[in-house]
Image 1 (spheres, rainbow, N blue to C red):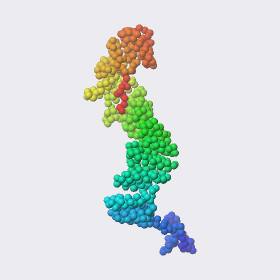
Image 2: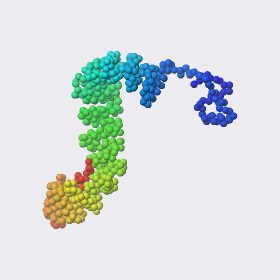
Image 3: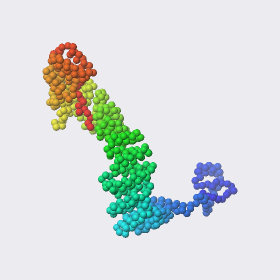
Image 4: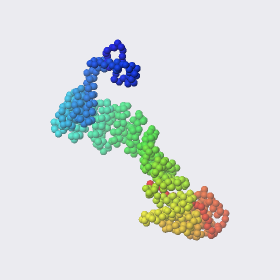
Length: 613
């Protein structure tokens, strides 16, 4: 920026280097006869002083030069040019000798280059230039113990420098920290304890002093929980108590004190500290989470749950908190309470197909079928190529007897599974697939799928076969044929095979009794059906109905009425039962002619129909 300068009679603009090309071109076009010299006045060998407020003072020049040299030094150091970096940093120190941290850094660069004596001299000069700066003392002592510890004189001087600093700066925790470190390195633990005790006796009111001193003490005695010596724990507790007393409204300091109590398993004072922080700063979710951890370590699960719920009230999108709550509920086998938190966590994090599948299975096992169907349809949309979700949908849809929808999901599973997921398409899968068709009334399709299931079972090695499952399949197909008056002889053979495989099954005994009934072998039917009544774990109205019909056909009317009334009492909504009871009550038995029924097939809700965990 110029002051003064020449004044021209014919006033013209002084054209600067950055003048707009657009304006220049317009002007030249308007006065084509003029040359560029007509638009600029070039002054050579002339200097114009800057304004007074822009002139740097002597100290300002030193700072500016120091900054420039520092920038250059950083650049050299980044490139690995240590010699050049050291030169630049030393220039900084010439202009700004109070930069004690830079002096320390430069000394270590000199040491790396093998200039140990020069480095030591630099730190000694730094201490001379900054005698009232505790970190200048620490830097020299630290260098001596690092590079001259093999010499007794170096070790002695390292201690001497920092001990003098402790006397000179008794309220600076950094000097205590360094001296304690030296004591511990030399296995002088008693001296370290005495030094910390001496510092702890200070009448300092600065919370930072007590927190720093507390951290030094914790490093000196890492075992400060209930297994550590009482005298050490009490000394450090006293230091943190003074920190808490000095904290005032500094909640960060209070939190740090709480962290100490938490780390040393002093749970009650930790809780008090964290609660104080939360009271002053309710939105500090990190502190609330720490409080939950303390409650957990203390074994107060109710308080853990309460605290985590409070976190979710403030931050409902915290996936980790939802997971933590879910884990607590699952550990208590309260899966219904865990499920919504796991769902929310997956919704937030967009979890993997495996995570979705695990949660879907939990929902199925918890009989949360309506919610499971909604959840699995969402999962199927997110992972359209994964056969796991239509496969799992078949379980919940089946439980809710939504057979038509279930059949569609069976079809999708077959399409998606292919050869890569062939383990899904096992005999249990096709058995349930067949049962869904049977329940929906597709008898012909059900028959094909039952036959496929039996074929798969027959191909297994004997030691791989599950006899109870095979018995269930044979029984189901046989009973389906009986109920639909199809293939009665084959049905009887299947059911007898099922009895051989699982002789203690009440459901299969009922099927065999019903086969005898269908063949008008009423005495054998009655005996087998009464055996079924004894074997069945829970009373079954269908078995009572079958027994009643057998008694009735044998002319034992009172017994028939007794069992028929039991059936109606257990299933009062079954109109067929009520009509049969009314008929038995109104007329004498007709011996020799069996009545057909439309009761449902034996339960397909066996263990084989439940999804694998």
